[in-house]
Amino acid sequence: MAATATLLTNFKLTNQSGLKWFRSSDRAQRGFCSQCGSNLFWQQDDSPAISITAGTMDDEAPLKFWGHFYTSEKGEYYSINADELQFETHTQDYPKTSE
Image (cartoon, rainbow, N blue to C red; front, side):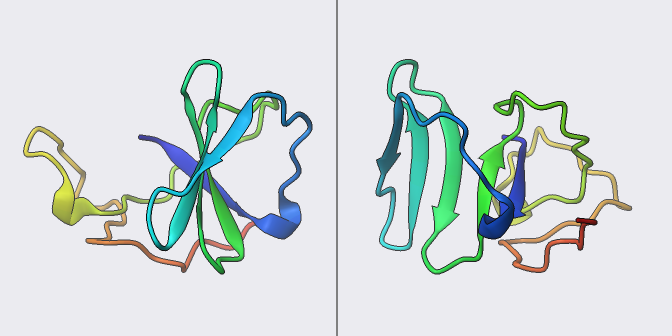
């Protein structure tokens, strides 16, 4: 799944109609559309950031590829270029973005 992330201080929902939150583990919650079931957000407890499923934003935000998370769990059918950032689990060291 392709996703992006931002700090919560930069995040603003313009419409919460149909948004439901599900406690998906003891450390995180997921936001999804209650009408179609689409996965929209993932938020780890006490994190300053929120992950947003790419393609769910109305704005033409210039999303840029940064790297791959959880590569230790990828299927054998995935091929990742050796020059792309890869993390066996997850990182909180997101790249700095301009304001």
